[in-house]
Image 1 (tube, rainbow, N blue to C red):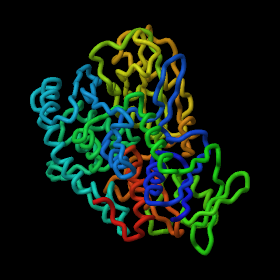
Image 2 (image 1 turned 180 degrees about the horizontal axis):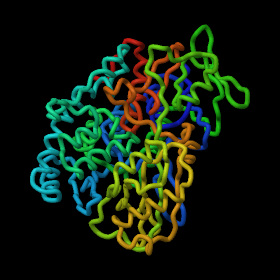
Image 3 (image 1 turned 180 degrees about the vertical axis):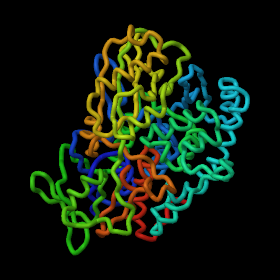
Image 4 (image 1 turned 120 degrees about the vertical axis):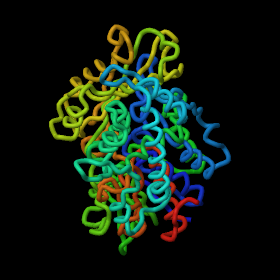
Length: 496
């Protein structure tokens, strides 16, 4: 039985802690803030309750597996999972609208044909078939296995089977998500639908590899889910599972250094000067924080995937509304930007201007979030550059865009709260509030994350800034991978 120090109480760190405790280790989690869950936080005011991080749960099987492996009580006994149907409503720039059912290829094909014209649904359906090939080729190495030592194979090989496209007497294949939209989907609205999945993860579809097709495929294949009471309830359930497995938590406790002895991690040093010894240290922190904790020790080598910082963050506007939620209102509506190129230039071109962005409107049908049936709680989110200031200007743009999804929105508005990149930075420690994207193949390795093991023996990294990248499913798998590497050693090859 080893003593294990876990730095941070984000979802990946909690997943690792629970699995390691079940394996018989003594696990202590050190969290510099006063609570658990990383970005899965909650804001409450006047009887209203809001998720301030992710609001929907993709691929819940990852978390079901955690609960199966760490105790007899399954996930569904700890939280109430609801499949969101319709999966999403899309309001496009030209005024057309599409409502897409959850996890139904035939239903989506029919809905897109009806909304966008004959043939649109078939093109999207054919795209999903190709996206499945990319998923099948990358699922294990990018989600279920430790990062390959020869990770450059993943960096160089594009797994998406792009359709040959003749252009100016040349045959080309789509290498980016934007090229898939232009050459294979051949409809600006389908392209916007495709690109919105990349944008939600802070990726520029003009440079995101074609393998990013797995993002909409995951939603299509495994559905979109909501946790009653908000996704903070998932964090609570995982935290309580850790407590049940006798994980010790020390909140409001900042780790200032990882102690090293004879080339191995030997414990952690705390802000008050205390030193806690440990045989293993698991760091669930952003790259800049890890560098500070290991000052003078090169835990990444020249042959490792570079720990590239994220470039995008998230802005959320929390709306308290008078009046009941209309019956039949979609849980999620995506209001697409009127000018996609202007939006992408503002987000990724360095201008940072508060243009009219793509806005996701979440309107859960959940009595736990409101003071009574005569009110509604809604959350607006948009991708913004990391370090964005002038949040009220951005917030006004989000509210204006959301008016298309919620008629009479401004008249119904009681008050609103804004959660900025600075708030994300405060919670996660990531510079500028950057949010890591999921690991993706190709693109020269730009979207791969460093391996969970480091060049310092006994020191591992977990969470969105290490393999397999950002997102709730990836966080859960990150915890599983780290636990496997510690319990089984370097021969561990992932879940079977």
